[in-house]
Picture (tube, each protein chain N blue to C red):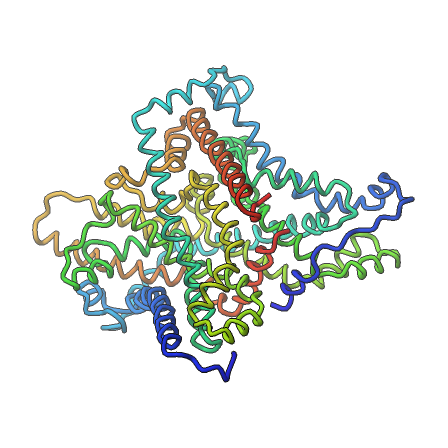
Length: 302
Length: 320
């Protein structure tokens, strides 16, 4: 930074306030995360009473044990892996070649295709017509209902197109073409190897989206054995809570039993949050650079 | 960083086409590019334009056995029924108020946070603060809803305990309609404010250091430099994001609302999109639900065009 310039008292005050502000933002985001991690390995008694507020207390791995014994979670995990891998492969296969074609200025019709794709950003058929279409295509309750209706995102196509347009020298492409390379050869041998950053960004964006999505599974799947992890989580985290709230007149012994049950349910919830989020959060710090890069490429008007 | 700088610097180079090459020759020579674009073309044709064809059932009485074409026309009946229903204004109000609330709180915070990040010296603390505040962006909406429900649960919730610990009586956040919108908006800020700073930080990284040097020589304080150099730098980005946000005022994302909704907070949590889901896919009123969805997307598209038009009249930063 600009050294040698003396900071005035007011500047120092401003800087201190600024650091405090950033630190507060950091704490507000970080504390709930630490709390969940600690609560997932603490005796639910202390969590419920508020005695556990930062570090684990009365360490127990009961929550994780119950989660890992739950076969639905394992099935959900497996389904999610399948949907994410297959879905992301389709996403990339649709997005990258199309984005490359649209990046070529000598591609007759690029304005037509770009326009046709962009319209979908602003207007769509809506929920019911989409549902009826998927039903008519006999995809309900199959993996295709999960991966095909979200095979590409116009936003990601534009981001990739911007990358191809601006990061790969045109001269290189022209030279390859003069040497007799076909477009296919050019794309596979030259463009793709030079595009690892954008391939990584796209794989990550699509991958995280596929891993985290629940809504298409909710409306298109009706067989429990096909549920992805997020739907299993919904049953554990969201629906169970709602059913626990309904009640009526209860005598004291059932009340105690229900209390213990509620505490264990809470413990399981903390554990399940960790188990479901770890894969994404664990890879994120290493790949943060790529995610940030993706957002930045996207922010340049294409 | 290096790449993106190069992106900006390069801009768009104009294409030179040899004049003797006819259009047809160009098409034939690049036949493979049509193959490249084909999967995306088919995808959008089937899964985006296909449903648009199905919109016609909004003006029909869709009967599954008769199909989309065979069902009888009813004109604007479904729209009229919706406009005259007792819940019409409630749905509009909930949708709009949640959007505006979200905009009022969620729009400035990433900007302020980005300006603050920018003043923090590069080092371990900055990196840690950024990494941690970005991370919630990757938490799935189901887990997010689960966290909200767990933290606000009346018997054991962490936030409820915190409020009670400070000596206040805690409301029943999950079931009290008055708290739904606040709960929805603040949890959204928690999850996405950090991630939202990236786009502003990218803009800030482009500020010419010479400007700051000149300002320092002129005796500008740090705050004045932020106020008069950094904030104006962010204006174009802010304008574009504001247009996009205004354009989706009626398009409140319903995935989280659907998860947090319960019969007790319905008064303030029912928005157009959740109503479309319930009437269409839960109650199977296909035509009625399609009509409401169509009304919603027409209003959305109109708003986007309108806001963009207004911005284009008053400044040079518009979407198109």
